[in-house]
Length: 466
Image (cartoon, rainbow, N blue to C red; front, side, top):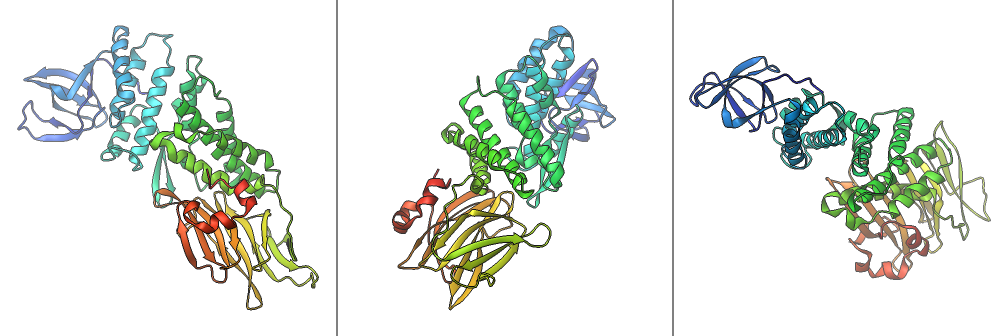
């Protein structure tokens, strides 16, 4: 943190006018953001004479636009009281960080520091979110970030989904985890701040990503679940579920055993009580559910294929898996259909549809994106159609086979996808021959065919009904 000098003042009003003279009609030199730290050099006619070292400029500021602060030990309780007030006040993050830095300077040696460091870290995280366009008071967030940078609070910028994501670097969260006076809530908040999925670089290579996820796993596992509020406990379980889903995906990609990680992801997800999250945090559960649902076939029960259809996989080009559909009692060397993919082929998901005839198979090309491949016969020719979770760029989502209606030759599917800033779940009926959407609903109860023809294995294993 920045070392603070004596005779200081903190700007408490946003866009406070720094003028050339102690008068409201004097020319404005610049507008100072809330939280800016200034040196006090005198007072005249209701104005403070100040100097801004960051901009190397002096001037006059209305006295009510700034507050003088002391940095002696006797001033520490007052500074801490203000910090506690600002800690949970959205829009006052830069001001709170300034008071936090002042308290750390004034606090006597040996004073517990977990509370102020936790407060500064949480405000830095919130300020970074505002600069990314998340939450309230987005205007001027970049300027307030500059104020925070002056106190040693650093951020990094990533590009995600066509926009800039600004993330706090987490230095103070790491320090909180090491402090003996940190409470369980503080440690949990630090772990959550250090493991945010949106702050993982999407351009990281496979080895770096595996290392990052291993570190995220360690941080989350070191936080005990006891002495936490219901909200924090639910957030912790949801975050663990998302991280272990990522680990299971990485292990599956390199053909390592992934059942343990996938089972841990499912266990953590089932431990979440969604009602404990409230409206503001409920999307954290939905995001974790998307990620776990994408890899759920790593622990899904395998039902042997029935009927005359058979699947066979074989290596293709480096990194590829080739899938062949065969028919028993025919030439097994001549597949009915064949396609290769760089994705993970969850062979345990294969479901034969004798009345089709057709076969449904889950294929996962990306970490949080699982598609449905439909092998079906049309006019004596077998084709493979890919049903995607959504129409936009792959981000996070899954689609899965839920049943078949013989009379109308309709495939029952469920899709859940993150798109346009929200998460949507749809239950659909698709015509098998051309996959045209016939009916859809947000809940299966609105589609009578789901009640009668849904696949029992799907109902037992799906997460779409949670």
